[in-house]
Image (cartoon, rainbow, N blue to C red; front, top):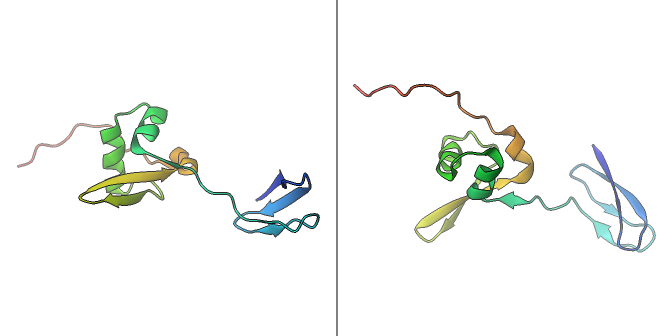
Length: 99
């Protein structure tokens, strides 16, 4: 997929997905845009669920491309903004009692 954007000099450029392009007018090199990373709280607000639920989904691998950042003994999850729409929510159901 290609994306049109304007260089800082005003020249219109086409950026191929995952690629980079050099502006023929000013010579400035443009790369793929940075992906915005969201916190568990921000994702929970967007989806209307509790942050603990999103944290559990990350631990279970239900959130695509979620990365775990370590902060001493603590950790936090960072989720790319564009992958929030692809979160696989588990089907609601009763939890089984352990025998």
